[in-house]
Image (cartoon, rainbow, N blue to C red; front, side):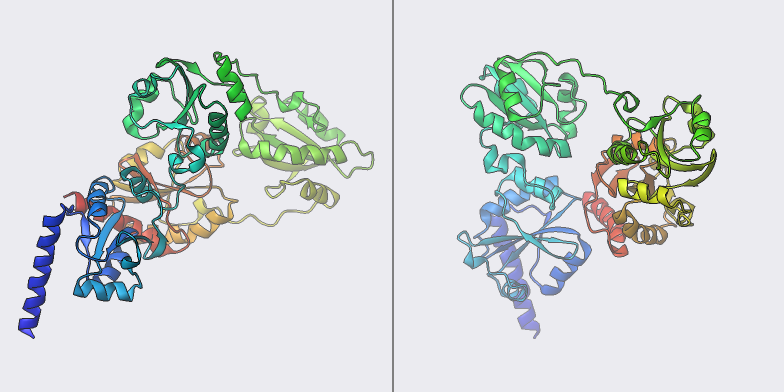
Length: 510
């Protein structure tokens, strides 16, 4: 038995030597040959890309490429290698039902997420694509990988003017992960195809910190930003000229500086059937109308904008009917601040019901036309509000605009959940997030924090932190944004793995 074990050990050493001789493999790539080690790897790492090869040399080209990738994604993902051609590796491959010999190049790349198989890697075998995939395995492929984007010139370095100087007219799309950018990509692609051979439309992801100087040079403050160049020289932005492919193609024929943005028409100045009140007119209106709903809003509030059409439609029915059970009114509390302070309005929209001039109920559930009409036909007290997350005892730190930066600066690791109280996915995540926070409450280096994005001042904070949906989880290191957490959020154990992943990164960097 001892002789056999010594022989196996000698074989493993020889294999390792042969591997190193064949291709220089990064020590960051984990060589796995035993099933128990493989299971441990998946159990302790949340983002793993595994290369299976039919022999020690069949994956040389991919190993060389993955060695470079491993340097960049260190701490964010793990790359492992299984040689299905040696004795132990063959057993492992059989158990996990992987056969790289069925592939033309004798290599198979599979991704594992949170301990289980996620997907086969089927994107281009390039450094850029692999890095992007491992940084966000569930995200969309790179724009340049889309066959429909073949007519867009994809710029990759900071020397923008050098890369596009050979073209007479160029419109550069500041392409990034933002939702608006993604919605604009098909339009931009179509415009690029329509103007091919005449003008050039280019795209560039300028979000990485390495392009901060470029963003400052071309005044890129949001996404997408469209920069226009002539003979390599930046002239101005494409702004306020329309968002269709035809708009872009027509503009390229005669590029003009940005148009002044038309001021947004205030709701009270439209033909809205809602009664729009002021600090001076509110009390008189409530005396005159014994049953009234009043919506307190802010013009910039996205939820208010979404509710306005529903409120207008309900008012069209209620405010013009002589036998109406009640009327609808609205107050812009950014202008009429005395009213906002008087009724302690802290979030938008806030809907209150008044009866004979007296405030009766606050109604957070009234958002649709049908619900509004139904309520006024039979006004009833709303069900008692659930105790807010902030008011419940837990180890989660609830932060706002005033203390967010200072609180996170003191923590080496912080996972922040940006949420809205009404969001169902947020409600599902809260108990699991809270459980994870309780487990790490004794560690002064770690913080689990939450921000209610519906609170007035916090809305700007959430916008600054790139929150586009709820819940959003951001990881911070001493107050500096590091990355978004895109893992599962329905099990407490998942949130508990996040700090373990931080710690593993620290160990890898030693």
